[in-house]
Image 1: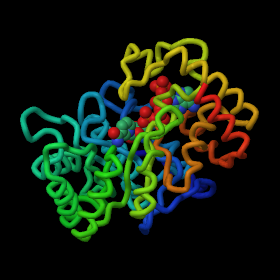
Image 2: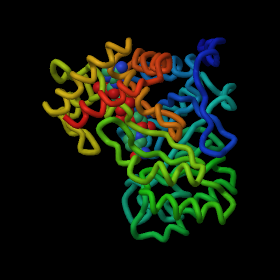
Image 3: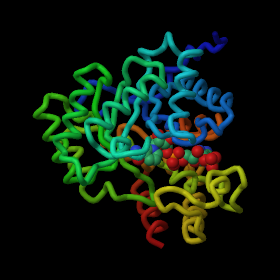
Length: 332
Ligand SMILES: NC(=O)c1ccc[n+]([C@@H]2O[C@H](COP(=O)([O-])OP(=O)(O)OC[C@H]3O[C@@H](n4cnc5c(N)ncnc54)[C@H](OP(=O)(O)O)[C@@H]3O)[C@@H](O)[C@H]2O)c1
């Protein structure tokens, strides 16, 4: 058993935003367990980060079948933390998982078939020690499986009680429109879309936001810090213990700590300081400036990353001059 007791003040300062036109509210800051919570990472560090997050009102924890490494280990570790410390708070938590990327060998271990999605979620539930997740996502669109099958699997997953809500991730505007229509027809509305969104990756501004607003779907933007690049951590060098240092610059999504990017971050950092914020806090506030954005989905390797992210909520507003200055720097 545990000596962890969540802070009595946990709901005092966090903002909760409605997820599209649903009944569900999510914290403006959510915590993802893609990195730093796997079998290769120090368990106690991850546990402390989760405790601090919940103490600060972060009620939403985002996982996927393959988070680790190794695959599945972030769910196993989170399941351990839930069992040790958070069982009695289950109804205060929104826990999500996903399937779509490769998880096990053979034709049924990735993409969007009903066979894969249902089997994968059953495995996730075992690792998490849960009867249901709150949100289950199709992690990526599958060009070869009929959308009706993938959305039909999400509908079945919700109706069978394995998940409360259905979501999609990284679907483009047209795929999102079609997925939403199928899910609506089936009677399981699409609750949420999880796209990547940060100052260096603004693809959702070209069509997706319009679809989400029209369909009443919420949005949780992942990697608001561009995996740490939109912080002050790389302004001098690449620390060995940073994500880029640890993975020898091999970051996903084509991210790299390039001189051009760091030159822009240096200028953005000056603006953040003028606003009385850190670079990371301004990057998070910037993502949350759009009303469609239900939550910014951050990652953290240390407790103070979570504290800093939550403190971004103290200064969310931007003047038009500040927004223009950001546009000029990003275009430079
Ligand atoms: N749906 C999808 O396809 C998909 C894909 C990717 C991610 N996601 C979700 O999004 C979540 C967040 O992704 P992400 O980890 O890339 O988010 P992020 O917030 O852009 O980056 C988090 C990383 O930035 C660094 N950092 C955070 N706060 C900092 C601070 N104040 N100062 C300096 N460095 C700081 C840390 O890296 P260091 O290790 O360098 O300290 C941290 O691990 C994931 O956990 C996952 O749940 C979803």
